[in-house]
Amino acid sequence: MSELIVSVSGVRGTVGEALTPRVACDFACAFAGLLGGGSTVVLARDTRPSGDSISSAAKAGLLACGVDVIDLGVVTTPGAALMTRTLGADGAVVITASHNPIEYNGMKFLQPSGPALTAEQANRLARSWREGRFRFADARGQGQARSDDSTHTRHVEAVCNLVDVEQIAGKRFRVVLDSINGAGCGVTPMLLQRLGCDLVHMNGEPTGDFAHEPEPVERNLSQLCRAVAEHEADVGFAQDPDADRLVLVDERGRFISEEYTLAVAAADVLARRKGDLATNMVTSRMIDDVAAAAGCRVLRAPTGEANVAELMSREGCIFGGEGNGGVMEPQLAPVRDSLVGIAYILRRLAETGRSLSELVAEIPSYCFVKTKLSCTSGAAGPVIEATRRAFAETPEARFDDADGLRIDLPDGWVSVRGSNTEPILRIFAEAGDQQTATGLIEHVRRIAEEIIGR
Figure 1 (cartoon, rainbow, N blue to C red):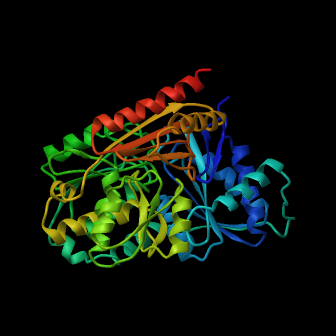
Figure 2 (cartoon, helix red, strand yellow):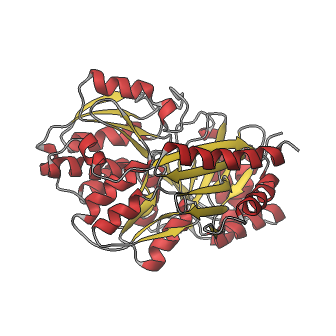
Figure 3 (cartoon, rainbow, N blue to C red):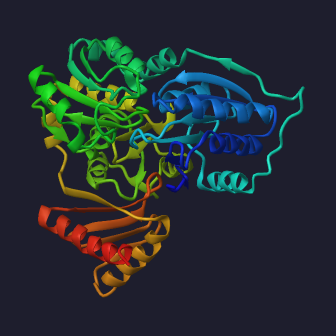
């Protein structure tokens, strides 16, 4: 049986094996125990076929423990976060496995202000679930359920309040959107219509039948790249199944690394307000260059949206996100939000009059290489220690173990860590040239394969 992944990013597992309705119900009971009877929880899900059963099980657990439930139905994760704040709920449960394949589903647990649980809260939740001592309400103390179908409208309105809608609409941008038949199918066209765009919508039925592998990376977006070129569009946007991540394709139909989403959006934000930015340890240093050009700083947290949100709140950062295509605007909710990313990218295009390829060319570029290896959760530690020993005799190496292990060198950096969302080891490297970045990746990969293969 596959392993249930429990981390600061929530819970994920293969449906019917690691993740069953019983597991979902028990985690909901544990979450109810953290909040207390009489609390109110927002419940939402993406379009995965398993969403109904997992969501129903979670609702049953919450209600049985005396927690009221506001069921939003199929909405985006950032939409659920916004509604948690808007409705004054005590937390939220979002049934989604984000970019994982259709065989997976998961549960994200959100704080009242919208972000995912802190590491300390996530640890308490996991401990409560493992102990399995839940407090069920009596007949009169059961929670009550109601539905709310206003998420899409509220989300679009909130995003539009951040930008000059008439300025963007006046450009009549032609946009190709790939929603992968996920949660973004309904709300994103609503936003683009408000922004006056001529929309070509691909994979826009909320069936959960993903048209390609759901992670929005280059190898999965060839159809979008072709469509942008064929329709002579100004830009292409790709979302993941819960629509918290956004990846760009330029006007030539060329895939733009997911690292550029945050960098271009940050350049737009810093053109109108100044302040510190927040990101994680493995986001490209492009964001540092963008911030430095505006006289601002970048602060870094361990990987995980919750960690970046916590840093953002603690240090008063005005904007942030992650290099996986995640843009976080604290004015709305400190979570990754593809709709905010779309609005800010279009605003940048409208305001500068430049094409997306020209905006990208203005940002200093690096060679960023990412790879991953299948491994059990227990293998990450030995690989990290072996990597540290391998670089220990390099005089210029600087080590940071806040998030797995990151090693900074004069000509680049390399990171190795266990994933929060999949049973894999992630190895990232960045340098000024392909040969150096690839060399760093291969060096760490050989170390990892030797240990994993034992």
